[in-house]
Amino acid sequence: MTTLSDPPKGGFRLSMLINDTRYRSYTFQFIALIALIAAFGYLGSNLVANLKAAGLNISYRFLGEPAGYDINQRLIEYTSQSTHLRAAMVGALNTLLVAVVACFFATIIGVIVGVLRLSKNWLVNKLMGVYVEIFRNVPVLIWILIIMAVFVAVLPQPREFRGDDATASMVLGSFAFTGRGFYFPKPVFGPGSMIVVLTFIASLVGIWGYRRYAKQQLFDHGRMVSTLWPSIGLFFVPTILMFFIMGQPITLDYPALKGFNFQGGIYARNSFIALTFALSIYTAAFIAENVRAGILAISTGQTEAAASLGLRPGRIMNLVILPQALRVIIPPLISQYLNITKNSSLAIAVGYMDITGTLGGITLNQTGRAIETVLLLMAFYLIISLSISAVMNVYNNSVKLKER
Image 1: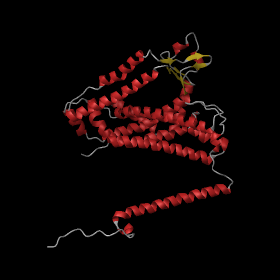
Image 2: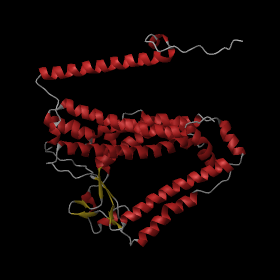
Image 3: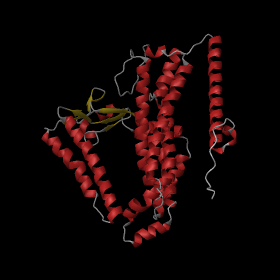
Image 4: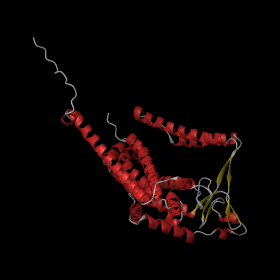
């Protein structure tokens, strides 16, 4: 009796790289990679040859030379005698500050406007529609200039706060909004303040863990666990108790009018406020449309089914609609975050010194190193954009539909 078995496997042959479907795709990808490397190598060698023929060479030694100029807005120590590298770092931090703050406020405003655009109230619905159409159809540079002009023209100058009681003219006696910029109380951290800060961070982690536990209880056992008041308690109580236990180690330094300007507190220049505010409300109009599209993508049957179970409208939105809508909202939201980061390069229009104004502006003009500074600018924006995309893609993968 003959026993049938699989035919013996032959050895590997070079012809299999083309004829065998198991290897063919890898072969073509490898050939494309080699061609791409060769093309970039040719362009690079051609660039070096042309620079050499013109008597130029690529060098970054200028980064160690004194910058020789001042920067009006900075998060780290800097003087005119600091290096160009230090000036570039100051500009990079200023760019990141605008991008982070603008992304935060644009998300909040965009979500609120997107939800209100679906309101059954005719007036609210139309007002939000007018906001979206006006702000997204006018270039962001125009909004930056308009808001900056309004701040300078409408807000009072510091000298107008002078009088018998300048503090009474401030908002809540602690905030001063002037044509030169905004002044806020500044926290002063004393001995033991780190323990209070760590307690606050631990409270945030506790809130996240408790809400995750409540959601798990709902999905696994159908048991509704209250999250509002426990979250509020975890947010305030541990930190406040530790604050008094450690002897109130954190105090506030309030801005006060001294001479012709305010001293003390946190000073945010009007250029920073105008740029951040303009980027926020401009990008929020696009985010609002993304949110509206994500919610409308969910079938009305989902809402009706949740309502038939007795869920209130707020819980229907939080537990049924938004978790499904996020799969539609997140991908275009990533693009809006990238747009905010890149649009921050318009800061020079209002005198805010971001990395385009420092490295790509004054440093480039002083040193004449156009190729080097442009390459550094490209690398900076590329790294930031790829980082934002990577983080948001991780979050996008966590909310996407998972097949059983």
